[in-house]
Length: 348
Image (cartoon, rainbow, N blue to C red; front, side):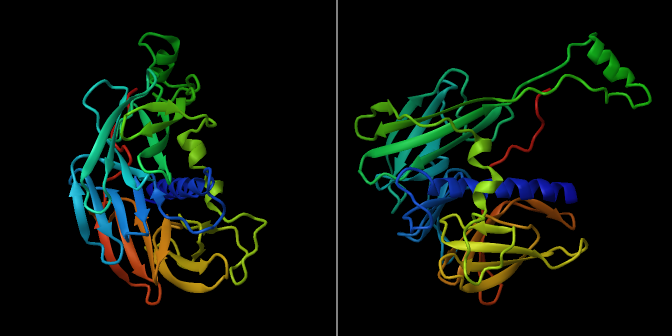
């Protein structure tokens, strides 16, 4: 359980960092208020309409009211929200054509109606699958664009290298017999090669379907989600906020979360997470958590965050977004979302 929790902590931290990366995209600076942002890839927050767009566990995309956690609408026209661009919710649907085609669907955020869909060819070897896959990891984000009818989408694909050892080779024989003084099957083999990564950015005209590449530095899922990107810069001093290392930015960059271990290893909610305003250092409140940090944002007097799947007392809990009242620390609502990670077996 502890190993699984540490793994989840790492994943959550990388998701946090992805949201921080969006603050650094062209046209964004620091902690200035933003229109829409991502809590993590595939989970888009729309403060203007008070909605959160998520991949539904029942299929399609749900728009969730961020005050009550109620579903506003559902569409089966797409599967993963990528971001708001040109006053449309740019989304990705699973393509049923060629394996390297990415299907983009533009949705009206008020009612969930699909307006246009376009297929964009990816480079050979790139599989832009919406569903988590053992073959590789595909991440995409729609950058905010003020012009209607325009969408700019950045993507990255890391292919998982399949590396088996042919039977009868020296490596396989050593693995079957085991190294000297060791157990069978634990012989050191060749180093696992780094995954092949491809990335790109393109502009899509939603009316004509024209696609044009946009020059951009290479990106990888790992680079986009570096843990350091989610932390408060060391040089930044925020009045009222403790000067500790475990300070994390909210997904929109406007608040700071300080994580403090307040329990022992036998306590389930062993961390206290305290939320402050980034500019003023005003303390807004705190809540208990079983993980050391969560991707989050603040709306009114509530903190909204995501928790990943976990098992407690033989009860499996699915991924959820939750809202907690910062004045009382009590949960106000929760909503199940589709698990973004592949958790099945991997090819040899």
